[in-house]
Amino acid sequence: MRTEQQWLEKGFAEATNNLPKRIANDLKTLHARHSEKELPSIGSYYIQGPIGSGKTILAARIAMKAKHEIFLNPPEKKTEILFTTVPEFLFGVQDTYNSRNISTAEVIDRFCDAHLLILDDLGAERTTDWAMSVLYLLINRRYEAMKHTIFTSNLSLAELAEKLGDERVPGRIERMCTVIEKKSYD
Image (cartoon, rainbow, N blue to C red; front, side, top):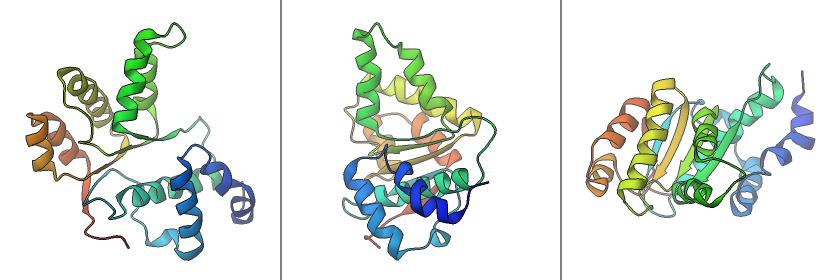
């Protein structure tokens, strides 16, 4: 079993390696000022609010809390925590159409199977039939498997349904997530 001191010396830095540099930098600053105890427990959340209200950082902090727990008590099987924006995820799936190295199914399966998945900026993607079907596939698989998923969005679930022109994705999210409304950065 690893110790808290090992986490502070090595684990925290390793845990932020796969995050965007801006978020990793913000987390380092926040880590010194805030306790993980004040964060919600690991679970599924739909974090909504205006631009600059701290949605992404809250999601990243919850992911770091999960990484901290995994670091201190490593599970027997590999546990992956993934963080991506929805447009970046869709781009990655679309990019497989031109690749011989990785299949579309492999990319989607990786995101479906992650222990915790953070999908940042839901609603920022261009709404096309293709994007809707890929998002629905991902979200429905995670919903059915009861996987922890955190979404951030500038849109309420009702606004998201209106933007998408479909209730299925927001309906799944509403059933699988606790909604957190961020009004300002704190």
